[in-house]
Length: 414
Ligand code: RNT
Ligand code: ZN
Image (cartoon, rainbow, N blue to C red):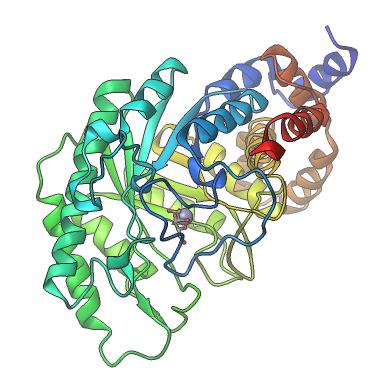
């Protein structure tokens, strides 16, 4: 066995932590990988491009433009982050046969059949997202639109997606998380804040009135504070989201880029867990606004992971990633963020959380602070390397070379 790992194992044992057990448990933590990092959130169903106050900046070469390319890129990323995954798709990634097309309100399970095959071959479940942006009818408001036709169109889209979500769950045997996020809002101060929210509520009720298997499909609602061009008002605010999910028995989704900059999702997790059986997260890195930067191993990322692990409710938390950077190699961006979040989970699992809780309850805050800081320099890196080694993934920065070779051989030629 690797010498560094043996020493690390002994060191963590002094804290009562069994690194062998942690390695096994970490491999089972399923992280939902967002397909949209690979193609700048473009999708395959139109040339409209991204909209809705989100933006991918950068023009790095090698973007995936076909399902085959995107699937190949996803495979690359999966190989570089050992452990369990789900695949997170948007409705805009429907795959049409030659000459075929279905608008968003008419998409069917068959348009996602290649994705199901892809996921099944890799033993993954699939999560899903209706796409309420990047479409001519998403120019203004969608589910909160005052225009009945537009609103009805998007309600039909939501219902079509529920059926596809159910299909994913049935085919893969893994429950599907279907996340609703709408970009609806206004750049400037609206005259009426209540009307759009009331219409959003009605639209969601209409979608959820469709019968679906609630043990296999978990509908989540993602709130947001603002977007580009939607600075003054977002219909699906945090309060709307919380009120809606708790009153309707669906699941809250918190994206840590969707709050005011000094608010921390790490502090919100425990409250939500007390009021909701399940909780969903979009882990990202906010830089001043919802900028969807690559996840770093920063304090908030670590604190989010710690809250997930220390809560003892990991099985109730759906972890998904959400960032899109086109200014650097997209596969490196994807992989770095994914590995960083898994490292954050590992660090949290190597923390004596129960012992720290005791210190807190006994009021021994001096010891708590000192130990929390000292443990930061414990050799978790050696455990992570061993984890990669055992699961057959590159150790340390060796994965970068792999990605750069792939860039030279594949991406540059696209
Ligand atoms: C947008 C939301 C949403 C999207 C994805 C593409 O602000 O975070 O989750 O990023 O659905
Ligand atoms: Zn998100």
